[in-house]
Length: 251
Image (cartoon, rainbow, N blue to C red):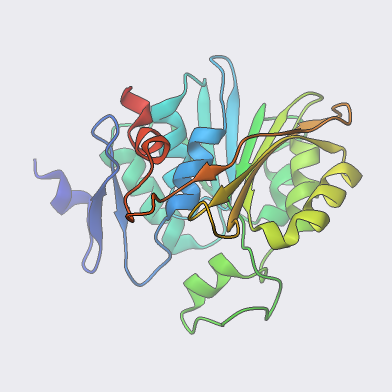
């Protein structure tokens, strides 16, 4: 059977994830995953007995990469946009991961009602970075929703994550450094104590453009700031660490 003809629809493409032979279905007209998702998938850790939930999973990139890089018990992706959730489900089936990953269509703001309290050991999220109308509005609705806090806010994400995690459950997020004061304050307010943070710099002499954060539900107030992650060498090539991250699941 030609699996591509079964799972891939007109206007979509199949992208190689360069790990375990996995591929993902994407559509150029919708939001395609970027480096932030790959970095978060390496920053987050899911232990053998743990269940992980990815909030706003889009086309399912994080559950698929997390499954490839960890020994977790099970992975779930929650996505409000039906078309993206459908693509994510088809990618899961295409890779033969139907028993390891579930994709649920639903609203982040109702996540704790959907799944129940303290139902996941780990939560990951690559959320919309922009507040409301801040930044350039993309006329394509799917892209705009993915980049702007239209359907959920940082408060929604943290409130629901706090409900979904048991004490000592872990929260992982990638975001933009310009919102760090708000992020750290609100994480603490929702009892998800910031424990680990790493800034990502495009070049060693440029400002950081991403931040990776780990929080602990009901953790003690003490945070480790890790060495910076540099993406590009001076000649424009990826640094050795970036190359390891992109191929890390097989190393």
